[in-house]
Image: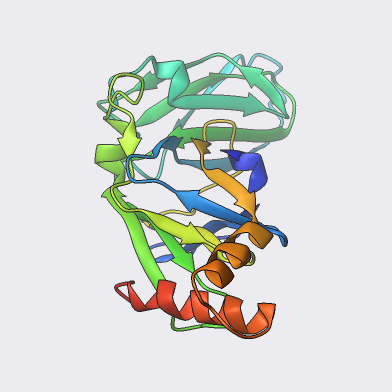
Amino acid sequence: MRLTKKDFIATDNIANVLTPLASIKVPRGLACIINRGTTFSMQLATTENFDIDEDTTGTRTAIEKLLSTKVSTANIPEKLKIMCFWNGNLVDFIFSEATNKVTAEIDEEEGILEVHYLIDEGYFQFVISAPGRIDAKSIIYNDDLLGLHNTDQQKNPLMISTEELLLQDFELYVYVDCPVSINWDSPLTKFRSEFVDLPMELILTQAINQGAKGTKKEIESFIIQNIVARWSII
């Protein structure tokens, strides 16, 4: 099962509160295995919108704006950590790390300047949850955004150190706690990983072969109880 950010359902996280940013549910009829050593790549961006009035002189070619949060110090090309759109069109810009200001090329028209950028302040978690168990959640990965964005993920892919079986209707969440709202749909927000998927029927058959008794629903509930019993519940 190859996953990208398009497979997730995005939600609005609350600034300075640990809240869900995106989630994905294991489809009915499938189970998913997250093997120890599973790798992933991810980066998280915020978006600031600036309403710009028309320049009645007709001479404006650029505008400078102070960003509310410090841009990531990641050692990557600038255009991979900041992007500017003027009325929906990608435009060139100059960024000053010393002042945290961006100067974007725009015309004299009224419009909206969108600035997408990576940040380093805050942290994130991968959290799994079991269906019908509000209390049953477990963290399978966590790191700060500084570590996330300053890791060369091509040379040193991020790695999950636990092994988990997620049955149908289990969910995987991306939680964040940072000073701004993260935009999961930003072109700079990225996610990619690959999990092993297999038929749910195979999991139930294996349980029956190992002596499990009852209806399929009862056996599934029994498996869920055993999975959750191993978790460090949060």
